[in-house]
Amino acid sequence: MLYPKMNGFREVIGLSGFFDFKLDPDNVGEEENWQKGVESSRSIGIPGSWNEQFIDTRDYLGPTWHFKKFYVPSSWKEKLVWFRIGAANYYAKVWINGKFIGEHEGGYLPFQFEVTDKVTFGKENFLSVKVDNQLSPERVPPGNIPEEEHPRSVRQRSYPDVNFDFFPYGGIHRPVYLFCTPLDYIEDIAVTTSIEGKKGLIKYRITKKGGEAKEAFIHLGDENTRLDQKTEFRGNMAEGQLTIDEATFWSPDNPHLYEMVVELLSPEGAPNDEYTLSIGIRTIEVKNDRLYLNGEPIFLKGFGKHEDFPIIGKGLSLPLIAKDYSLMKWIGANSFRTSHYPYSEEMMNMADKEGFLVIDEIPAVGLFFGKGNKRRLSLCKQYLRELIARDKNHPSVIMWSIANEPHSTKPEAKEFFRQLYQHTKKLDPSRLVTLVSMFGLKEEALAYVDVICLNRYYGWYTDPGQLDRASHKLSRELDALYQTYKKPILLSEFGAGAIAGVHAHPAELFSEEYQAELIQKYCEVIESKPYMVGEHVWCFADFKTAQVAYRVALNRKGVFTRTRQPKLAAHLLRKIWIE
Ligand code: GCB
Image (cartoon, rainbow, N blue to C red; front, side, top):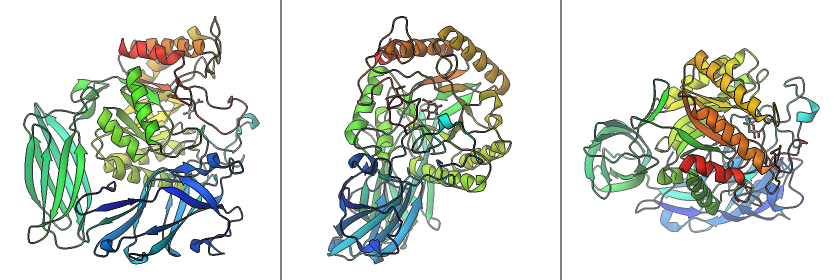
């Protein structure tokens, strides 16, 4: 799926901004025809979560409506018109001028519809978007799970009753766009890259729709290189390869990007659509239980993160993205995981530019097994399909994560993940696949994955306050895990809660000193094991969770506060990772 871009053949109109907004707690909107608008709505800022913008909506998760008037330029009459939302959590239905145009399930991936015959050109149009974020055991990630389906102690139950550890913000969280393409247009471009000595090879596949175009022109370049190639369509697809003899490879140290311009040619040979993609030439593989980027061993240093900030909730904030990358660079990180859902396209583009290696995760968090497995599996497959369609061209993405900490106590979990693993490999054989486990040795599905991701909290949830014991247990478990699976292991979560400003000497739980000491001890253990391919501290920054007795207003495991100020652990990590 291509991100909307403006050029000589395509135009983009941003519809983000204030929308009229109304709650629909009794779910009567559709019956009462709110598709055409409704009285007494108020203004909401989009992108943004409704839970943060008003006093009375903090815990509201049911159906809501977002309305907006917009214009479609008359000059778009000879074009195809598209409507696109970057992400809306969790279920969205869209109408234009009262006519239904489509729906989408899943809160973290883009969706778009062709709306040419639903809009009025040169006149006012009316958009209504219903977004429902009700928690349900049927949805992924799940919530409000009945006791008999997934028993948990009363103390584990939060408000709202989520089966995961972050606040279930609802809303239109990413940009809303109207854009146009020519009638005969480039539908998609997919590239994969490989390396032979100094050569960089770029395989491409272009798909087009509409019209009679038989050929495309490809121009690839940077300041030193320029390649031009004509390619022919067979049906709607054109495939080929470009070779750069002396290529500059993409890596965290030198995130070099080439520009690839694809021009679609009319049967007469005139350009009639164009799309520009940034390409990084790199390889990623596992060899002898190690991780290799461009044929060189690589060790991942970084974090699990969240999209989370006061007032905007999970809404896109470009300044926040810029700030987070600058802090990750300052601290010496080279990677992160998009825990526990796909992050915005804007964040992914910046990872390519700034040179970060990304483990790209679907929103499969809090998975449990039993009733509803089939639906959950098909949703996870849909998420993987949509995520790979969206992110397949990012050099930064090195691994797909098919789930975080599934409650894999039932035997069917193994088959569930076997299917997800195969599904992912089929969609993208060029990248690695991981599962982020809390069960470790008991997680039978680890037999399938390319890299094992393990989350561990010795010294926090177990053996609190006892860091020597924690190190010892960690070391023993990592060795056992490696002996069993003989695969590279990334410690994808470890950390301790620290309330900024709380100090204790000797260190104890919730002090900045304890968090720093725990992280130091874990890093020492990890770095002593040759099969370990990385350390991702949990978490980059403090973040909001549902209300529950064991969270002190926020999850405090951030090495930065929620507003991005460093705790002691941040300075320590900088020493470990940079010096
Ligand atoms: C985990 C989860 C993460 C939580 C973290 C914690 O294992 O993957 O979502 O926030 O633990 O702090 O408990």
